[in-house]
Length: 182
Image 1: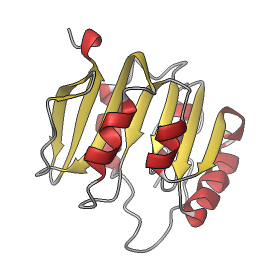
Image 2 (image 1 turned 135 degrees about the horizontal axis):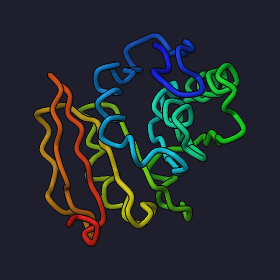
Image 3 (image 1 turned 120 degrees about the vertical axis):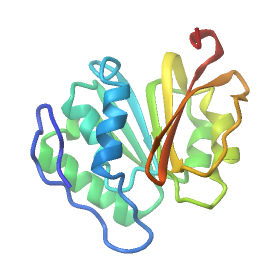
Image 4 (image 1 turned 120 degrees about the horizontal axis):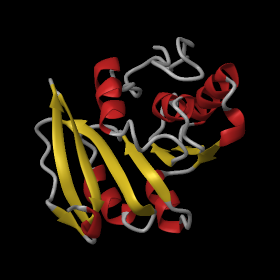
């Protein structure tokens, strides 16, 4: 797996092996960054269930001002830090060792882009989606990667489903604040 473009273009990223880790495919990563390409420069991003950090690192490489990576796995945190060091992007980053639900329940910062790719079939959507409204900046966007068959609500608190993109067996559902849906 490599960084697609930007300041760290072509740099290889390390990932963890095993069934617990499922990095976002290059096809989905490219599609996500096509969706948000004009939002990335100078944006603050929250990468939840960060894994190896590839989505946040791609955003930093493309000009995001800062990324906060959240993952409860010590192994994932170590790999994220290793990848950030290898790409020279550590200064604009923060790696947080926490459960995503716990982190969101106490978070006070706002983010322009929130990307999350939780483990499939573990029921994270109803636990996490209601917590995102409070950390999404005005004009921001949530990108939730999931199995294409999983259904998502049209509204969650003050968030509105903007669009659902499908890529084979994977989908990315986007949410924005209701006032930004027009």
